[in-house]
Amino acid sequence: MKTNLVLLALFVSFVAFSYSGLFDRPTELLGGTELNGAGCVCHTVVRDTSVKVWIEGPDTLMVGQTGIYHMYLAGGPAQAGGYNVAGRFGTMVLTDSFSFWDYRSPNELTQAFPLVFPSTSDTIYWEFGYTASDSSSIDTLYSCGLSIVYDGIPDSLDRWNFGPKFPVTIIHGSIPVELVSFNATLKNDFIELNWITATETNNRGFEIQRSQKSIVKSQEWKSIGFIHGNGTTTETNHYSFRDENLGRGEYIYRLKQIDFDGSFTFSKEVEVYMPSPSGFTLHQNYPNPFNPTTSILYSLSSNQIVQLKVYDVLGNELATLVNEYQNAGNYKIEFNINQFNKNGLRPELKSGIYFYRLQVGDFNDTKKMVFLK
Image (tube, rainbow, N blue to C red):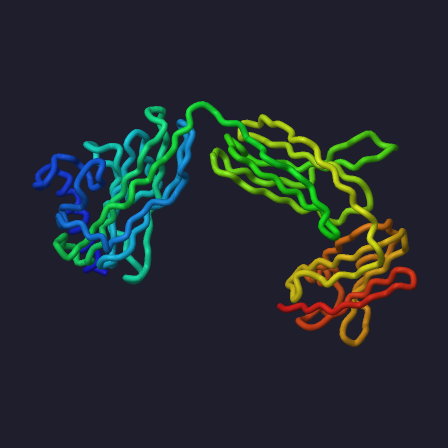
């Protein structure tokens, strides 16, 4: 432990010394990236392409928007590593306590403390932020990674390399959430909604709303779900939502697109007809095996008195999940072992095989389910 602390102190001291202005550099540029310098020349002036360096993160930002990025490093000695990242026009943002700005190069971040590789075959990364400015419609992020022999002495055994330049498109003004398509499709016993956006700006997400056609009632909209959006992006995005346990009828759907500031717009409306089930059907529970909750689905082709019960392998009745008159349609019942035991029924259900049975008039069906603790 004492040795590691000494090596760390030497490393930090050398980094500070290299930025002090006393170290002879082959260039007058400051920093380690191609934007501000000539690499990690305080270790070695030779660039080593076996060291792999790259940036991942959003490639499109609005003016003033901050994106979170990762700079990755692999290869070389891969005992410990450091990094430099810079942006030409925007502002670099610290997201950890280990990086710092050099006052002479404020648009570049430097990792002052070495990050240890778990093994020489692993990849490590650092997180940083970048805030887009209005100086240009395209900015560039620069990176430089240093893979070192962790002996606390910067020398020619250490290796570094530049990463590919990472372009960032800067959006001036605003782009609406452009909805390319929105449709509803009947899929067996559920309705699936799908929509596609070409661009999004400040998009918090989509509230899915449903109404049912009726000659008696006026049209009423009900919120049935919410799908998070992608903020601001110029990439195409695909969304979907499944509406289940619906009875017979004609359903109308629309999307309420909501911005982060609370403003919203509605999509066009789409309609789909859900027919009655063709018969009585008991579906296999899901998940199976389960712990602690599973779903049991069944379909009714007409209005009937329904019983759904759970039994053990000896045929003993353990629970009645449904015992009532129900209209034609599709139903989903949740069976929760914890709730079952909480009700004081004894003995508590243990791991093993159980059965659930649906009784509708002359129709009955039984299926097996497995509970695993």
